[in-house]
Image (tube, rainbow, N blue to C red):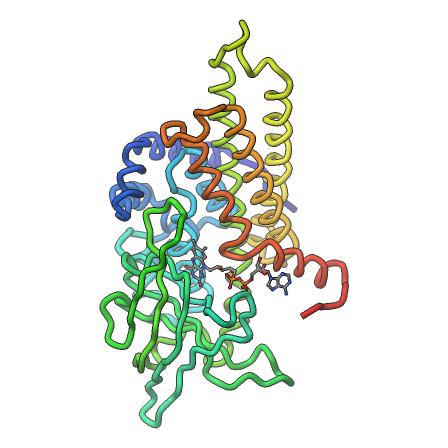
Length: 389
Ligand SMILES: Cc1cc2nc3c(=O)[nH]c(=O)nc-3n(C[C@H](O)[C@H](O)[C@H](O)COP(=O)(O)OP(=O)(O)OC[C@H]3O[C@@H](n4cnc5c(N)ncnc54)[C@H](O)[C@@H]3O)c2cc1C
């Protein structure tokens, strides 16, 4: 049974809107241009407890759920800048990954620091050859007799390594076995990835207007230990898939909020701009696309909240998480495209923001997971259609 929106949720929205309002367009523009982490914004979120929203209270968090995290991400994205997406690497991959699958020692070490804003994560899964085919990764962690692992291989498009205190690294620990394809992948928590011996970073020239950089990461005999394993050796894919549903919910919330921001800006502009004796928003060629995009975003929001509720109730939310991610990323991108159209020439200036919003929303159709893989999930798991790959 889905939990309804409550007074708590109104308070969360209000608090987040207050934080978002304190960081204006100039603040974000500077951080994006300088590729600088928005530390003041991060600390404001930590101070109000929002970075630890899903972390249990015993580890310094708020003990709330994915519904609350989704609302936070939606409002941060709607508030501008890059507030929403900031959640995916640390509170989702780091926080939820460790709170659900970490050892007691890992929970005690990492969770309070995530909640306090003292620590950030990055996540290294994608490889140049394997791409979307996670089973095909060949970064390999070879176990030695003394219990250490030596990691060799390469990752690509890894975001935010320069700011990360820790990297979640996905590596093979056993050769691929056709009879047990999901066995043999392990997640490691690798501290200080930017400084660490055995890790070489090479910056990629990506076009996304973000404050973070993307890297090709080369592992050359990186040493990690058994204590660095998150979950169990060879059991990393189960853990990864468990966390990916929250990543999809978070991605959907971010696209939803970004789409709503595009609508807010389009409404404001179309209400003011007057070229034929009345605001352009009165013309249905401008008004209807905006209204239709809003309707699509409202529908995506319902599925998102349903999925988040299911996750909080420990029910399988695979369908809702995938549908929400698909619909929010498509409707969000479309909303931004329509907002650009409503802005005329101003739609292509930095001052009016909508072009930057479009670029960020367009990315949500490809990363963190592509919409083709989302449709594969729906086709195979929900509709029982045969697998093509
Ligand atoms: C800005 C940015 C930041 C990123 N940050 C990170 C990060 O922090 N960590 C990380 O690990 N990765 C990150 N990524 C990588 C991202 O997750 C991948 O780019 C994405 O998952 C697609 O993988 P690929 O680029 O290898 O595409 P490919 O696997 O080469 O696929 C190319 C296209 O073919 C489609 N396709 C492939 N196989 C199938 C199939 N079986 N059925 C239907 N369609 C298919 C794909 O959906 C895609 O559209 C980032 C990417 C970008 C652009």
